[in-house]
Structures are given as C-alpha cells and as structure tokens.
Image 1: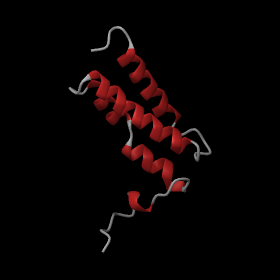
Image 2: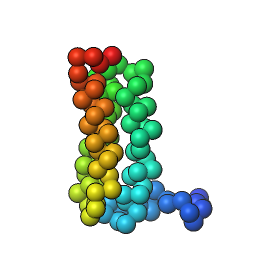
Image 3: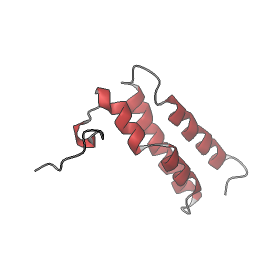
Length: 91
C-alpha cells in the first residue's frame, strides 16, 4: 500500500518527466540548500564537483521538458559553485 502524503505536498512517486509536477518536484529535491551543502561538504574536492555535476545533469534533463525557465536559477547556482570549486582558490 502506498503511504499517504498530505494534499499540499507533491508526491515524488507520482511525478513523471514532463508532467506539470516535474519542475516543482525537482525543486524539492535539488535546491539552494542542497547545492550549498554539496559545495562546502567535507568530501574531497573532486567528489564535490562530481556531485554538483550530477545535480546539473539532472536539472538540464528536466529543463528540456520545462516550458518556462523555472529551473534556470538553480542551474546558474550550480554553475557558480562548480566554477568556484574549479578555480585556483578552491579548497
């Protein structure tokens, strides 16, 4: 039996790529907090960049079905984090 979720919260199980819930659901799983956490975690630098690249790939694939540009700010934030971690001052 599928667990019940409150009506106000989208159910990730029911969101399919291209569905109207898709962009909203992606924003719940990849947000500024998750991007920041990946960028400043204690993982080795290469692993942090790798994690951010995977987030970026997910957003790019979701943006292909996004009629607006709701996910663009998250993509730009990931790009800035990757650039920072790839620069000479990266720790």
